[in-house]
Image 1 (spheres, rainbow, N blue to C red):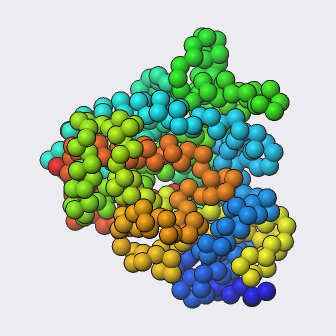
Image 2: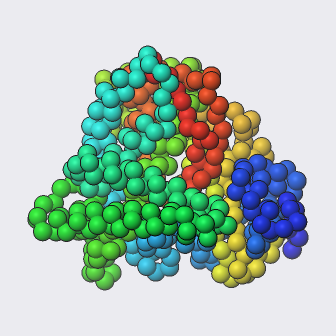
Image 3: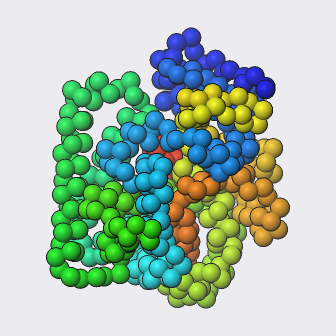
Length: 441
């Protein structure tokens, strides 16, 4: 077995943890530059950090049962409950079977109609910013993807409820980011009101979801949304249905895991494309086949737009890291990983590894040409994970991002604000430091 190089960032774990929390991307780059594609660090306990494709293959696919979700996943459980992101073992497998039909192609085509209608209205709203001051495009993308998530999940909802959910989810996400990234602040959060506000928000959110479920059961209505699918789902092996708590957990998981990742990816894409007029022209060429928003069939005939989205997910992966804990001893790529070791896999660095990608820091949709995709090793590109726990909403997210991007670029031109400094700020997803401001033309 090869020894795992140790990256010594500080004499004390607390100092190292603070340095990592302040700038994790710089921390990781330093580690890989110093030690190679796999190294270990001590931040209160030992972590093995890797960007080797073989590491991802072993942990996510070949020997996925040798690992459980990392400690950060446990911190999400107060919100996500026992949904697909946080659950484990046989219960997770049962839930995956129950939820999977929601994302079959036929169902996606039906949900696409809802996406298209909301996107059409969003385009009209965006007109008010044309020729005005630069806007925070991340906030606008969060708005449309949140609307799509809520509409496809719950059907009709009042604007007041939507606004309240958006406000409380945003506050809750900020709270969770602090818990995951800055655990040394937990004692302060218990006394400064953050814990109390979190419990209040969660109580409101739970009541709203349970009220939706109860109303749906009592009304006898059966609209074509994801909530109804969860209510109707039956486990083929046992004949059992989900109870209300399980439905609540899966509904919140779908909303939380879905809308922010897509919004973040779209924000980075629009910022990047504001510097790439030739790429925008090629997307518009494909967009000539539709008037305002594409149909599902038209979207399938837009390969370059898909390449652009895939390249955005490579260079700016919303799910920038994956963590697991070994529950048995493992030998991975010549390294011995003992039981109990925390494994931190950097998707961000995997996607920017110069050994795997030509000119990895250059935004180039040709990375995803048919020929390059055919020749690329499977585990070099993992924006949605891999193996049994690959993101269940992968196709939903891809068609949502392609739809919104193509419709926006057909109608508007975006320009970067030179006075606004852009930086990457990894939270649960790969956010920007101060938002992304663009002019709408």
